[in-house]
Image (cartoon, rainbow, N blue to C red; front, side, top):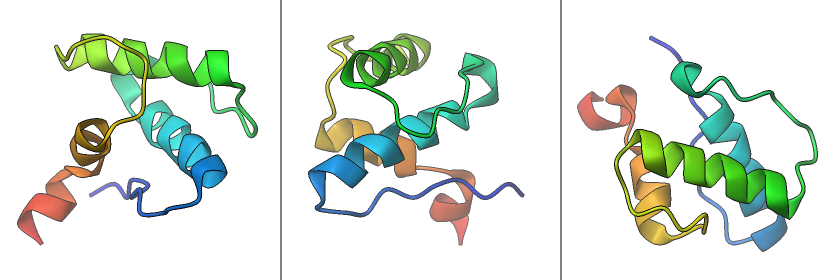
Length: 78
């Protein structure tokens, strides 16, 4: 079973990096891993993820987005 990044931080700068890193771990999205993504790159990645998951596309980090990203099989069943 793969290990995915779990997003649990209150640091707003780290939050953006963790969200991008977690989204880039989705094989089907084919995003390049970027060490320091800018805001436009993060928003584009979020929109792509939201489209893939059939969520409302706004490109913003929200608690529901983080919940979806953290809902891995490992988190659900262990």
